[in-house]
Structures are given as structure tokens and as C-alpha cells.
Amino acid sequence: RAKDRGRSTYHFYSSQMNAHGQAQLELQSSLRRALERGEISLVYQPKLDLRKRSVTGVEALMRWQHPTLGPVSPAQFIPLAEETGLIESLGRWALQTACRDAVMWRDAGMPVQVSVNLSPRQLNLPHLATEVSQILADSGLEPGLLELEITESGVMQNPARAASLLQEVRALGVSLAIDDFGTGYSSLSYLQRFPLSTLKIDRSFIKDLPGDADAASLTSGIVGLAQRLRMKVVAEGVETVEQLGFLRAQGCDLIQGYYLSKPIPAEEMSGFLARDLRNLVGPTVAA
Ligand code: C2E
Ligand code: MG
Ligand code: MG
Ligand code: MG
Image (cartoon, rainbow, N blue to C red):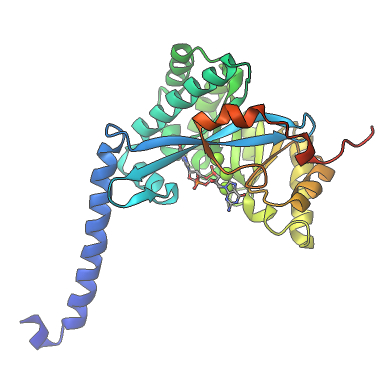
């Protein structure tokens, strides 16, 4: 027996790996049925326009309520969906649902731009622009009320292909945002190559504001860069009024984060949008 040959250690690790592999396989097969079982939903996190002093946009974020495990984090199931190809159907569902919800808010007299995250694999779909345009037509949403968030790793896997796909999407009138800006490893030349409307500064820079001098320099540099490239700039993960004050002074356009609100279900959005948020921003500065 293996144990007699002194290989019990090997057996221990191998059974650990099997247990992990088994759990991943089970998660994968339950993810395959999650959509039809109604376990997938979207929540929305509002973004505050610091000049208009109101919410002008929301980001759609996917949630999975597993029947026995409870909530599974997108950090866990999005990569799994990406590996297995399930992201194509999940991503299409997210686009359809977000567009329908945006129409509902618009028809209630509260038009907000809805942002939907696109995974790298979706940037390989040859008919991405056709799909987006069909979803817009089916829902009745005007293209200007839709934004797609992409990441540097998503566009740099096949930059030439991504550039032409994104040109087609932009030509529909849909906005494009670069997400998690500042965390990637490629040269900044992609900012020129892709038709981006918005730059989202990653939370890792925001969390040390305003006390950390390096984080402050990097953030104000990124805001200036975005302005000179005529892009709108959004700060992610803003949790304190001090962070907001610093970003406002730098000329940042929008903030998103727990300071304003956690992501909330669609049903709660109308109530949130009806609130007067002007005092959250602070006093208006005389021009
Ligand atoms: P992301 O697109 O960068 O989304 C922002 C994440 O930061 C969200 O995490 C949000 O809940 C979190 N967040 C927002 N404000 C704060 C704050 O003030 N403090 C802290 N600590 N966190 C904050 P979430 O919802 O867990 O999503 C994680 C990531 O999963 C997203 O990062 C995105 O990359 C991915 N994801 C979520 N939904 C989708 C989707 O529908 N499609 C795709 N492809 N990816 C998605
Ligand atoms: Mg995002
Ligand atoms: Mg982000
Ligand atoms: Mg981020």
C-alpha cells in the first residue's frame, strides 16, 4: 500500500487537491443552472456628479445567491464564468436587465446612465455591437444612457480586435469606460487607441487619500491626465467625506463608493434617486 512505501504525505496533498477541484466543479455546474433558477440578480451602485450635485449614473453589479452556499462573491464566480464561457449568457442577461431597469427609471422621470461591466471574453464576441444594438432596440433605451466598463487586461489580450469592436460599439452612441485604471501593466498608449469616454480611478489609490502624499500625487495626476484627454473621471471606492473633498478640489467629475451608497436592488433606486443629496457634496464654491 502507498502508506507502507512512505507516500502518505503525497496522498494527503492529492486528496486536498481533489477536494478543491471537486468543489470548483460543483460550483461550475451550479453556475451553469443559476440563471434559469433565478439565483442571479443585479444590484446598482449610484455615482454622484460633483458639479451637478446629483446622481447621474449607476453601475450594475452581479450577485449570485447559491441555494446552499448563500451569496457567492463576483470575485469568485465571474472568473469561473469567464473560464467556462458562461459569461456570454450571463453578460447578455446583465445587459438586457440593466437596460430594462434604466428604461424604468427614465420613464419614472429619473434618467440615469447605467454602466455594465464587460469581461475580456465578451470583447472576443464577433457580434458584440450587433448584440448591444439589438438589446438597446428591444428595451427602448437610448444609447447615451448605456455605458460599458472594460478593463485594461480585457482590451490588451487582442488590442487590434478590441479596438475595432469598441469603435463599432462607440459608433452606436454607447459610452465606454476604462475600469480599475492604474492597476494594469501595459503602456498608456491604449488610452489613445480606444474610443474611451470615461476613466475610473481604482479604489487602491482612493483608499489612502487624502493623508498619503504619494496616493494624493498619483490621484491628482490621473485626474489631470483624464481631463487633458477629454475623458470624464470617476473615483471608485470613496468612503469618507475627506476623500470626497480632496477629489472635488482636484476636479474629479464623479464619485462612487460607500460614502454615497452601497450597491442596492433596482426596487430601491427610485427612492434613492428622489433624495436630495446636495449636502453630501458640501457647499458650492463661488465661481
Ligand atoms: P468593479 O467593476 O471594479 O466594481 C466595483 C467593486 O467595488 C464592487 O464590488 C463594489 O461593490 C465595490 N465597492 C464599491 N464601493 C466601494 C467602497 O466604498 N469600498 C469598498 N471596499 N468596495 C466598494 P463587487 O460588486 O464585489 O464586484 C467585484 C468585481 O466583479 C467588479 O469590480 C467587476 O470587475 C466584477 N463584476 C461584478 N459584476 C459584474 C458583471 O455583471 N459582469 C462582469 N464581467 N464583471 C462583474
Ligand atoms: Mg466596474
Ligand atoms: Mg472598478
Ligand atoms: Mg476596482
